[in-house]
Length: 274
Image (cartoon, rainbow, N blue to C red; front, top):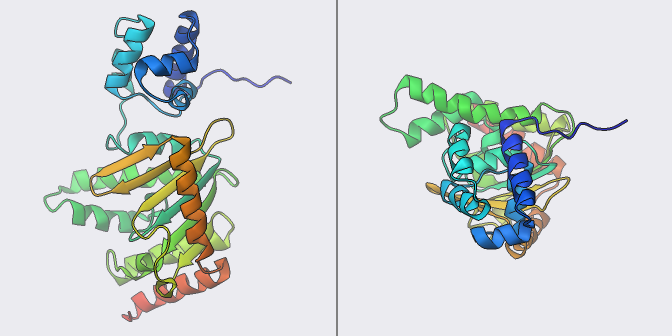
């Protein structure tokens, strides 16, 4: 029985059209990437619908393929609700076979409860309106739908102990958030490990990191800081990121020890202990 491989989403249709136009122009992915000044891996992600080019890249694609602004104009209809530097990451999350995430100070966005996310957005935006706050929370927590499937993606979550101790949203919000993460781990939906304070320095002490792997294309790594994020597809940088994650994971508690620590931290928040 044949499998229907036709593009389904608007992004996949964009990517398929790019692939067809490239082939019609007689260019390989490598040759097109040289004209756009990017990696062949990035062209592969564009054509699979996993990522969208930035406007400047779409403009260069149009020049390389002689498509008279076609891909730049179409891009305007595919604008993301996410901030520019995170938009491609949100797209990749939905198609990843494996996600390995490390958080230094906050629960990763894809695992946040509504009230935890709301408390963060209040802190980020002192002049927020209720409407904008609700919109931001909905946009973020919609990412949780990737965890609705029973098997894909496989998710590993590595947390610095500081994530458990920082009281975001008050004791009850924090306790509910920690219990939610622990519940998901106990249910088998994610693998959970904690890097305790007494582990001292570790390989990821300076950065938030997410690694994503796919069934049919090269892996990527994403790091994020204040008002900025960087998605990496360079094989050497991705490999270095994977090594750092493995090193940090080797210093972490076992899943059972991590679950016990997360549950204990949740109770400490409820009872006002720190």
